[in-house]
Image 1 (cartoon, helix red, strand yellow):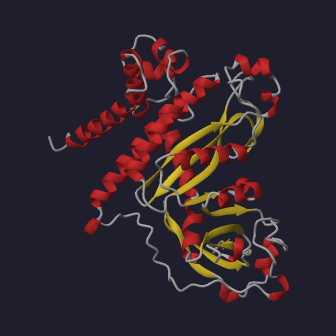
Image 2 (image 1 turned 30 degrees about the vertical axis):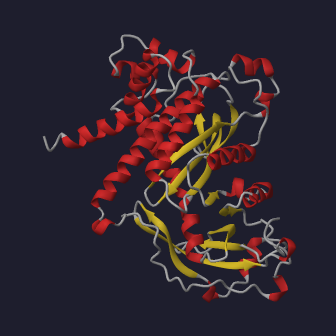
Length: 409
């Protein structure tokens, strides 16, 4: 019975999650089908497509599973909202971080919604693929994917008959990945998720519209930028080329698979703009650099906007959080079949991806609860309480290169 206890708890928790989304389906049959689908995504199924999930559930044909993803009446966005509420309830804390990134799904043929030859960071090259823009939510309790949008290139949005054949909604027009990211963030802010910070890679961070969007909504951020990024004047790499040796501090960007991820970091404040009507500024702009210990020429750069009381250790922690969405992608693909789908239409993609995200969130919540039970003295093993010296200070920009306005080029 002791050995059976974890399975019993697992089943109870999963049943609770399935009851949470059950009212999104008006009939018993789709409720049963979505239960079977989630169980299949979480089960020991080699390739988590319609055929193998149906076989795992004991169905004689995949018709029911295929119907669930195509013709059955339900809204994937409703399940997305339930997912966000579930993550907020179990993982949400003050100071939560929203992480934005995209991932590729390599596909054959030309009929899958949004597919074309385009660069995929997942493959590391230009491939025939679909691209999804995702948001993950991270706190001390764990991290999980919480939203998604399918990127539709102009080759699709300019071809309305092709869009109609793939069941792409008429209202979906061309939107850049940055615009999709802003849509995802707007929805997250309207959800129960407590969000204080946003982080993203350079594809999003270099976009001044993206950064101003975050600032206008009172969100702090640490976003990667290319070395050629202007920091209100000079290129950011030129700023850091003048940093004295003592400006670099060895700090951990968080715990990784091989232990603490240590880098050398340097940061400097950028002058603040005058607050409206003479008010005291409530935020501060920074430039931040991360230098590899093994390869000193390998330097990554960031722009940040933070509360006045934020320290370099806080910036390093948020910058290090960006890797958590990579962990989410890997886990959701390997364990929940995020990329195992064989659907071609837009609605099928949204439904499968949303259910796979829900399955992954369940695993994230379950793992977080298990870690919490094993933590000594009621502390959380993944606590973000920094072991860095809080007295670390920024270096002063040389007068000749001090920008005259905040770093929002």
